[in-house]
Structure formats: C-alpha cells, structure tokens
Length: 219
Image 1: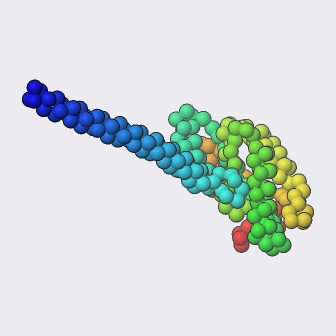
Image 2: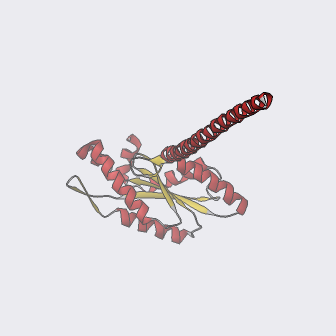
C-alpha cells in the first residue's frame, strides 16, 4: 500500500506539471495571437503609409494634380500599350500667358493660389477620359487618352482656352487669364515621351501672343 500511495503521489505530481505546462502553452498561444494581431495591424498601417507616400510622390502639392513624374511615367506606359495596340493619342502643353505679372503683383503666395485655382479649372475643362498634370511653374500637360481628328483637337483646345480664360479673383484682385496651348500626336509626332512633350511645347510657344514670347524665354 505504501508503494501504491507513493506512485499515486508521483502521478498527481506529474499531472500537476502537465497542467502547468498546458497553462503555460495556453498563455503562450494567447500572447502569440495578440502579437500576430498587433503585427497584422502594424503591417496594415505600413501598407497604408506606403500607399500615401506613393501618392505624395506622384502628387503636385500645390494643385493636387498629378506631377511631372506621374505624367511622364503614365505617358511612357501609354506609349508602350498603344504601340502594341497600334492606337493613337495626343498630349496638350498648356502655359498661362503673362503669369509673371501675378507673382509681381501678389507675390509668390498669391501666384501659388492662382495656380491652384487654374489647375482646378483645367481639371474641370478636360474630357473625363483624359488626364491633366502640372509640369512645373505655370505649365501643365494634358494627356488625351483617345484619338481626335485635327479639327476636333482644335475645337477641344479652344474650349479649354475659353474655360480657363474667365475672370478669377485672387486675394481681392481680379484677373482674366489666357492660356497658350500646343498639341502633339502619337505616333505621328514622336515615339518617345520627351519627343511628344517637346513637340507640344514648341507648338504651344508658336501659338503664344507675340508680346509673351520674350517673357517666356526669359522665365
């Protein structure tokens, strides 16, 4: 009997140790689940922050439009896709005439406000299928994601000029803006991003009023 009692005592001791191990395992599993949830939440936050940083990298903070980097990369992709599909599209280079006068009269902060409003006007003026971004200064680029015959393109640019040319009040001062536009077509005017932008830029300059050309060169 003494031997049996000893064995029972040892058995209960082992059962107690197993219970302790099970409790430790349960605690460890609970801690691991909590850490996994925290890790998943941290990863989600990192992905969200990464997306935000990516958006900021392609966003013009002044106008909230795509910036030059986005426009050029998107245009590069467009060229690859349309070259394979044998499709046509266009770009329109936009430059606002006499904009330096705004900076001279209202300072750069006033000029920045004007650019913000003008960017909004351009965005509201284009076709829903198209995209507009700011290249820098008062220069913008419109990506026309469809083929337009020459007359339709001229009509489209005239509508844009008219829409952005209405009165704009900045810091209590009234301005009437005019814009010079030039277009280039893929693949007729170039097969590379820089070619298309340069052709559109040159045609925009040719369309500028004579009294703004020297100013454009000096700026």
